[in-house]
Image (cartoon, rainbow, N blue to C red):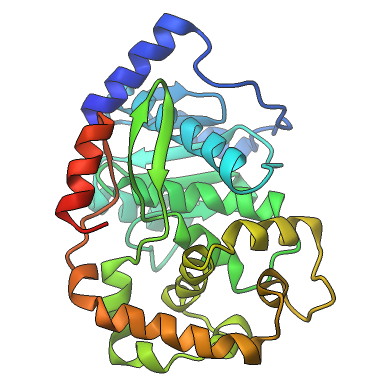
Length: 297
């Protein structure tokens, strides 16, 4: 990760305008969040995020650069971002420090494994080495909460989880990435019940993020995700009961057969899916293409 992000920072320093202008509303930083951030020695600000931690400031700046690029990729490819910025981010040194901080500074008795977004504090917390997919997942929470206020309940986790898996490269200060991959640990977690999951049950009451992620990946693989997100943002169900039905132009009962085919595709490709590495970005398009061939992407 370090090599390509250094290239990004050099490009930013040389051009002074690597990112296009974006008219996002300004957010004031809650006093409590300012107090938490002040505990840390190092700080780095991008266009949309302010990062804090005791890890080296240069590394915080790398995360800030990546996060800025990600927001603008979402704006370009998926939906209009209406979130207020800046968002605050705290990056702890390791998983142990992350969990200790959540328990002792924030009173979270059962910390998550990788990251968390706290809307009341306009803050996301993670740790160095949690993976770029953790950053994209947590960043998506404020984007979804404020840009897609009419989202269905299942999508509050289903959409951010979709963005946790990607591969691509950085070129001229921009992300060039491919989405829509299954996440091996989530597929493993679902186990043998996966092939029996009902679409209607997931979108009308599932509490399992891994199940919800299956739906957004399904939308993506069927070429319907952007349509779904645009309909949610427009609060337009096109006369259907749900946005999912509106995206497909048919009721759920007529989608179920294709949903079962999708689950069978996962089962048939389970061995290949389980070999997929964590989200990665490469220095050049050629490196990415070699990687894609290696893993059959």
